[in-house]
Length: 325
Image 1 (cartoon, rainbow, N blue to C red):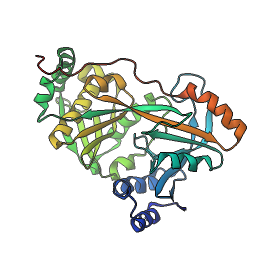
Image 2 (image 1 turned 135 degrees about the vertical axis):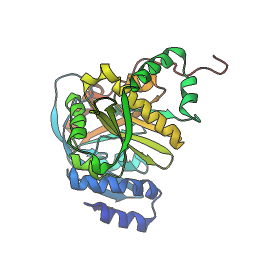
Image 3 (image 1 turned 90 degrees about the vertical axis):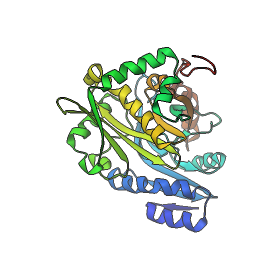
């Protein structure tokens, strides 16, 4: 077992060991390296028995997913130190669970693709499976109620100019739009500094009013192999009536993914209804928690169902069946 405080030493070890997860971790290393600089929170990387565990420290509201009395505690999070839907461990999940039970204090593992015995669900993520040649084919595949809703948004898109934005041109106007969303988010895990958007090698799109040229929104996307990830965005709530801005941001992501011919678009967590209504499917994510004190751990086990995320309850039949007009 070895522990690392920086991605530099982690990269050397996983390269030397030729771990199965090497390619995945290599894609994550630039992000993790930047977060060490811009969001230092005691990041640590452990390599053990062919597995890699990424952890950091945080004061967290244990009831983050339920609207009840907040309970803020200091925890060790097994996960990425940024609000994305990716897991923070690579390897056998049973070995990972065994590992975190041996650590001192309170540990919470987030965003696992596998359920844990006695664990619960964390926020679901929403995945768009791309099977379309172009955006028009996507629109024509929708059942009429959903196509009407999207066409309504696209009519308001005529008021917008959407263009690519160099990360070096990302400025306070864009950042304030990101902060507007963070201020509306209940119990965000972290708020990133402006430098993250200016330094991370990702694709940015800017949304501005076609007449006033005022910037009203942006999205940040990252392509890794055959998948497009929606990372972050920004807009003001008061701009929704004029531009249907959030729907148009989602549709631009769909359009971009189709143009890039990726297999999947990972839309991330939250805003369940809107993402499902454009054709995403809900993908469950799992969590578990453990405390090294047996008495406290028993208490946590009883409480875990209270702060487990409840999946979206409505099933949307977005796409036409075969032969349906």
